[in-house]
Image (tube, rainbow, N blue to C red):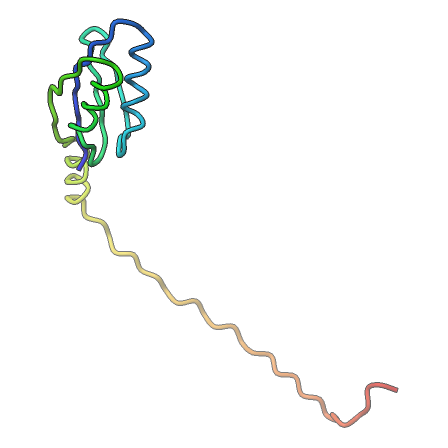
Length: 115
């Protein structure tokens, strides 16, 4: 289950922004991190991300952090439903013809080959 987490963090300088982005990126399960500088928000997308733990670590290391929203990502689920609707044709595999065997018989096998 993919989640989209929006956390509002008080970031007053570029150093705070990069620090907050690094903290969010190192959290377990995070796939992408985006900053909205105008609103001082961090948008985190990932699977099974603990949003409360992420907000606490941001609050501890950067400053004031408020968890704004946690939503499910549903865009890819719609694509999967479209793929299910498409019917695919059956795949047939025909057997390959067998190669003939070549049998060699000698007329006199008792001859000594080493002299």
